[in-house]
Image (cartoon, rainbow, N blue to C red; front, side):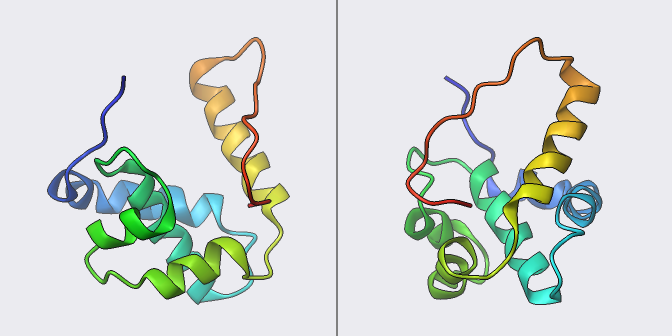
Length: 108
């Protein structure tokens, strides 16, 4: 099992993460959407068994569960270009032979 990172470890990667987020979420039209995209990625990287919005937001510095939930569930952004960009980046690093997408309860 792969464990997540502590907040300090993620903060040390702030520059690299900002560059990654800028590329992955470049298709999002609004700055606030890109900001919450970055927060969401931070939450995914942090320690914790449950990767749903509430436990992730409780570990984030600004702890704004409502805004993070709105970004994930209701914000009107097209997730296809984001997923495509992530696949491009991963393919350049891990050279996959096959992709498996796990079913999730929400589109994004």
